[in-house]
Amino acid sequence: MKTKFFLLLILSIGYFSFANAQYVNEKPISDIDAEYIRVWSDSGPLLSSKITVRVDWGQGGRIPQITDERRRAVSFNGIMDVINMLSKQGFELVEIVRDSKDENEIFYLKRKGTGPLAGIAQGSVE
Image: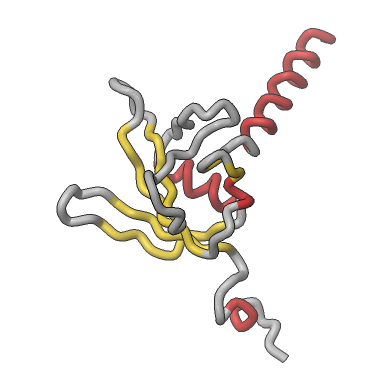
Protein backbone atom coordinates (compact mmCIF):
# COMPACT_ATOMS: atom_id res chain seq x y z
CA MET A 1 0.00 0.00 0.00
CA LYS A 2 2.82 2.40 0.84
CA THR A 3 4.56 1.77 -2.49
CA LYS A 4 1.38 2.56 -4.45
CA PHE A 5 0.92 5.77 -2.51
CA PHE A 6 4.57 6.70 -3.02
CA LEU A 7 4.36 6.06 -6.80
CA LEU A 8 1.16 8.08 -7.03
CA LEU A 9 2.80 10.94 -5.14
CA ILE A 10 5.86 10.93 -7.43
CA LEU A 11 3.71 10.84 -10.57
CA SER A 12 1.49 13.68 -9.40
CA ILE A 13 4.49 15.86 -8.50
CA GLY A 14 5.98 15.18 -11.93
CA TYR A 15 2.68 16.02 -13.62
CA PHE A 16 2.29 19.34 -11.82
CA SER A 17 5.90 20.33 -12.43
CA PHE A 18 5.49 19.58 -16.15
CA ALA A 19 2.26 21.57 -16.30
CA ASN A 20 4.14 24.77 -15.39
CA ALA A 21 7.38 24.04 -17.21
CA GLN A 22 6.77 25.51 -20.67
CA TYR A 23 8.99 28.32 -21.87
CA VAL A 24 9.46 30.46 -24.98
CA ASN A 25 12.84 32.18 -25.39
CA GLU A 26 13.72 30.95 -21.88
CA LYS A 27 10.74 32.92 -20.49
CA PRO A 28 7.77 31.17 -18.83
CA ILE A 29 4.69 31.40 -21.04
CA SER A 30 2.74 33.08 -18.24
CA ASP A 31 5.37 35.88 -18.18
CA ILE A 32 5.13 36.77 -21.88
CA ASP A 33 4.60 40.52 -21.98
CA ALA A 34 2.06 40.64 -24.80
CA GLU A 35 -1.68 40.89 -25.08
CA TYR A 36 -1.85 38.90 -28.35
CA ILE A 37 0.17 35.93 -29.58
CA ARG A 38 0.25 33.87 -32.77
CA VAL A 39 0.74 30.10 -32.60
CA TRP A 40 1.29 27.46 -35.29
CA SER A 41 2.54 23.91 -35.36
CA ASP A 42 5.66 22.40 -36.84
CA SER A 43 5.85 18.76 -37.65
CA GLY A 44 7.05 16.91 -34.58
CA PRO A 45 9.73 14.25 -34.35
CA LEU A 46 10.15 12.02 -37.39
CA LEU A 47 7.58 9.18 -37.58
CA SER A 48 5.59 10.57 -34.68
CA SER A 49 2.03 11.85 -34.34
CA LYS A 50 3.23 14.56 -31.93
CA ILE A 51 3.70 18.21 -32.91
CA THR A 52 5.93 21.05 -31.78
CA VAL A 53 4.68 24.62 -31.67
CA ARG A 54 6.09 28.07 -32.42
CA VAL A 55 4.92 31.23 -30.65
CA ASP A 56 5.18 34.77 -32.02
CA TRP A 57 4.32 37.84 -29.97
CA GLY A 58 6.36 40.35 -31.94
CA GLN A 59 9.70 39.53 -30.34
CA GLY A 60 11.59 39.54 -33.66
CA GLY A 61 14.36 37.25 -34.75
CA ARG A 62 13.89 33.52 -35.07
CA ILE A 63 10.42 32.45 -33.92
CA PRO A 64 10.99 30.12 -30.96
CA GLN A 65 9.34 26.83 -30.11
CA ILE A 66 7.75 26.04 -26.77
CA THR A 67 10.46 24.36 -24.70
CA ASP A 68 10.95 22.79 -21.30
CA GLU A 69 13.34 23.98 -18.59
CA ARG A 70 16.22 22.20 -20.36
CA ARG A 71 15.57 24.07 -23.64
CA ARG A 72 14.23 20.94 -25.37
CA ALA A 73 11.23 21.41 -27.67
CA VAL A 74 8.04 20.19 -26.00
CA SER A 75 5.94 17.78 -28.08
CA PHE A 76 2.15 17.98 -27.88
CA ASN A 77 -0.54 15.45 -28.81
CA GLY A 78 -2.21 17.97 -31.10
CA ILE A 79 -3.11 21.61 -31.45
CA MET A 80 -5.99 21.31 -28.97
CA ASP A 81 -3.47 20.18 -26.36
CA VAL A 82 -1.59 23.44 -27.02
CA ILE A 83 -4.74 25.59 -26.91
CA ASN A 84 -5.78 24.03 -23.59
CA MET A 85 -2.30 24.58 -22.11
CA LEU A 86 -2.28 28.23 -23.25
CA SER A 87 -5.78 28.68 -21.83
CA LYS A 88 -4.44 27.63 -18.43
CA GLN A 89 -1.70 30.26 -18.87
CA GLY A 90 -4.26 33.05 -19.32
CA PHE A 91 -4.88 33.11 -23.09
CA GLU A 92 -8.07 32.56 -25.06
CA LEU A 93 -8.51 31.64 -28.72
CA VAL A 94 -9.61 34.55 -30.90
CA GLU A 95 -9.28 33.36 -34.49
CA ILE A 96 -7.98 30.52 -36.68
CA VAL A 97 -6.59 31.41 -40.12
CA ARG A 98 -5.54 28.91 -42.80
CA ASP A 99 -2.43 29.94 -44.73
CA SER A 100 -3.22 29.37 -48.42
CA LYS A 101 0.31 28.73 -49.63
CA ASP A 102 1.39 25.97 -47.23
CA GLU A 103 -2.00 24.90 -45.80
CA ASN A 104 -0.96 25.56 -42.17
CA GLU A 105 -3.44 26.79 -39.61
CA ILE A 106 -2.39 29.82 -37.59
CA PHE A 107 -4.05 30.40 -34.23
CA TYR A 108 -4.42 33.87 -32.75
CA LEU A 109 -4.88 34.12 -28.99
CA LYS A 110 -5.23 37.00 -26.55
CA ARG A 111 -4.93 37.30 -22.80
CA LYS A 112 -8.19 36.76 -20.97
CA GLY A 113 -9.83 39.89 -19.60
CA THR A 114 -7.82 42.37 -21.69
CA GLY A 115 -8.70 44.70 -24.51
CA PRO A 116 -11.01 47.70 -24.84
CA LEU A 117 -14.24 45.73 -24.31
CA ALA A 118 -13.09 43.50 -21.44
CA GLY A 119 -15.15 45.29 -18.80
CA ILE A 120 -18.28 45.24 -20.96
CA ALA A 121 -18.01 41.52 -21.65
CA GLN A 122 -17.74 40.78 -17.93
CA GLY A 123 -20.59 43.10 -17.00
CA SER A 124 -18.54 45.50 -14.89
CA VAL A 125 -19.64 48.69 -16.60
CA GLU A 126 -20.42 51.46 -14.12
